[in-house]
Every structure is written in structure tokens, then in C-alpha cells.
Image (cartoon, rainbow, N blue to C red; front, side, top):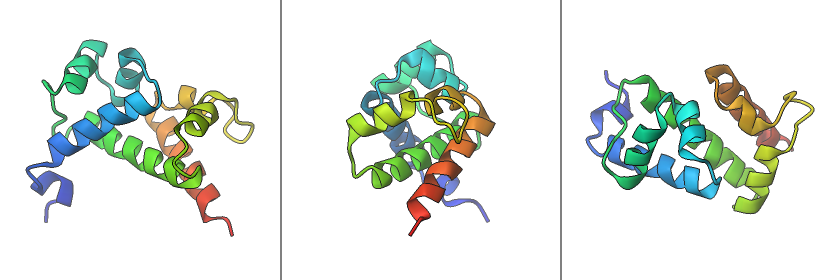
Length: 124
């Protein structure tokens, strides 16, 4: 059985557009977004302009799914305040040991940051 994202023909377009919007919301340069997704800045530029789409099954597609997960969790936790999200991402976090944005360039850092925000949201 295939995962939903791989069987949905619109998944590459939807995810690519979502990642481009996340980059805009968080003021990420093409180089920074590319470092997170494992893509070159030129490829990210094409992604943002709609000339490139993430391919299901590829590592950038998987990383983009995790980035969307982080965005949604952070957006929910901070009440859809983009300025607060940007501030949180760029401020050193003692629990994570660095600025969250600096951690996102590695798979481990992206997953750890996502798990951290999910845990914060789950607090009662």
C-alpha cells in the first residue's frame, strides 16, 4: 500500500507551494530553504516560481513534509502569529541548545525541533 502523498497526483504541487509559502512566512532565503530541503538555491528559486516540484519518494519531498509539520505545529502553538514564529526560530533556545532555525539544516535538527514544538503544544 502506497502512502497517501505518493498516490495523490496533486501532492507535488501542493507540497511545493506550501514550502514556498513557508519560506516567505519565515523570511527564508533560497540558500537557507535549500539547506533545509537538500536542494540548491537555484532549485529553490525555481520551486518558489512554480517551475520545479518536489517529487514523491525523494529526500527533499520527505524533508518538506517534516517542514510543513513543523510549520503547522508552530503556527498552532503561537496562534498564527508569523512574527512570533520568526522570532522563536531565530532566538537561542536553551532546551534545543541553539537557534531552532540553525538546527533545521540537518535532518536530526528538523525532527528534533518538530518533536520539541509538538511536545510544547501537548502540555496541559
